[in-house]
Image (tube, rainbow, N blue to C red; front, side, top):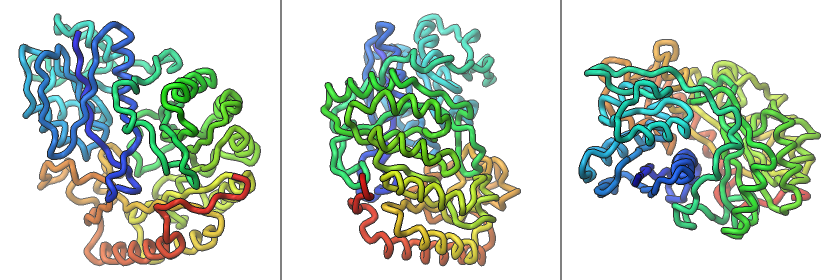
Length: 445
């Protein structure tokens, strides 16, 4: 069968105004890879706001992915305005449909919405594309008469090593290989995904999967060797939600790739690392770790259910620097309850850590659909969510690119948050005046 897999372009979060490319759509590339492995002809189509009408004539299956609520409208418009012939099977999956499958089914009008891990579900749906008998396929939402119904949940794969490598060959090299993306280097690099899921309960995060799955070191090495041979990469960035959780698994990957001579970076919590692990990571080529600090206020960290402390943050930063690894921090300002005092606590901790920090990305809090905060608007005094009166149907406002909306609290509280953000942003710009440029390398990096 001829299959089109459609995804919306997402630009780099930290450099949105520069239209810099973000990492490739791994969910789409894995779906394409498993479909190709089973003999289907696959094409990948990229759409964006204002450029979403496509010609899908000649395709037996058109599968749309919605990686965030902010891109919901782009895919909805593509589905409605594009051209089809015959009666192709229309599928929708992704982060937003995971949380709101019934609403997605009724609004976008596909035949099926996928829920959860997608590869096996996708293959089952392709196998039933002509019969349209979906009732025995787990992990989907479809119409039964006029009613949207969910089938039984699909169990996660026992091993994600069984999956083929993502089908990067279906995208142009310029969407995959980049420079100026690895800390203080200009290395030719690509992005990889070595694990899935995150078991931590942060209330601002929309984690679709709470059980973490790791690929083996052998699998990671196979993908990196393929990219060295195919694209000549010199480094890579691991884009997993939280790569450093299981230390044994991380060490397995480190040991398997050390001799490749690649430089790399990864995201981590501050409470899942130790000195020995960071030393092993540095020895295998890690040159930057990106920590989710989020806030320096104990009260805000507790409200976020981040379950970390300022001392944990200090230790993690010190251990990384002692290992010769650069440090980047992610901050979220404006979580419900933020005020001038909590902002000052963040600024004080940031000033203390500044000599040891290479880069900082500062974001405003947004109640992303699917998060605990979004699902409990009364608890946090949220306004304007889809479950409240006066909902305007605009999912695009749930983006984290320079979002200045008044999400919670009174006008007076919002004014304090606004003033606090301005003060914190000015501090970040002063301490890291070229925070979107190449910083000085860490000692030994």
